[in-house]
Length: 414
Image 1: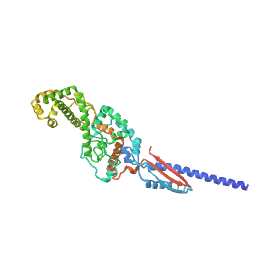
Image 2: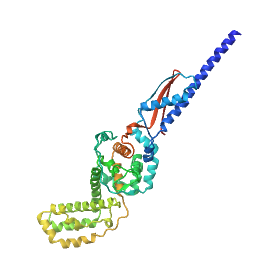
Image 3: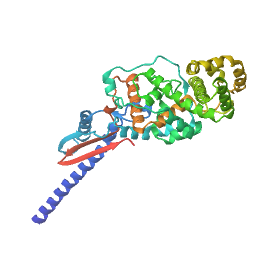
Image 4: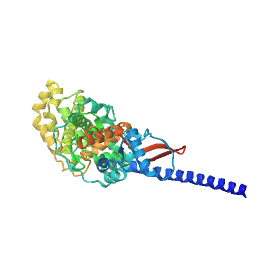
């Protein structure tokens, strides 16, 4: 009986120990999941409200202290637990890492941003202000892009615009080219429109994504030059597609430059005319108007007389051609008068649509890094002077030791 009793007691004690260890393990696993959610629940409200991104501020030490506090509150005095060390390792969850930022963007703002782009949400007219610049070296050095340079050329933009054709084509292509393009459309301003009433450090945020310079006016000017090259190439194509304009150019060239040199004058007049039309297009676009990708004869705005008055044309002509131009000016004006009958442009691409084409032509890496720059700059400007994406995290990882057993917990925003 004594042996049976001792055996029973040993088994009972062993069962109690096993049950207690299982309970401790269950408690640790349950509380560990709760603690990870508690850390993730401290997401930055401004980052979520302004950009739809979920991330919390912290570092290994801060999160470790929080876990210790949670551990003391949850476990102390409830079970006979021998607690060992706890530690946090957030490596790999930094919001400032491009892959993590893209992942956070897709999980948070992507759906609404794409809907905004496809649905054609109304952007408000922008008030042109003096541009700002960033001169602080620390701010520049901590930008995600690190000042990465490079942009896109006018010829490739013209080819891309012809492929897309119209506003619907541009918006659909932008929506399918990556969530970050829809994100830019929903949250970033341009020099012509703004998406919301929030303060933006740069007036030209979409232009910054294209050009990447820490100076608002420099981005404006650089983007304007690219837009001119784009429109100039497209207008030159439209001009050569119009037999009447080609015939007019040939006739005027023969009048002012008889002989074999007339071919060079034809080319000069065509290029100058397309350039003048492109300048008119830019005026329309910067007034938030619309310009077709390729124009019909009825949509052409300028006439050849204005081209002949330009210093560019007169400066390229030889003395004899200038003399003939002055002598035959009345005849030339009567020939070109019939061409000056343009209709008001109500269809086509807006300024922002042209910017979307430029943004789509950028490499995805460059586009994403500059997008991250704008988010960091605006968060500094609106809320925290020391805001840095690398100090915000989209997930949490920590470990603890209880009764000699190691536990590792990890979770992230979904």
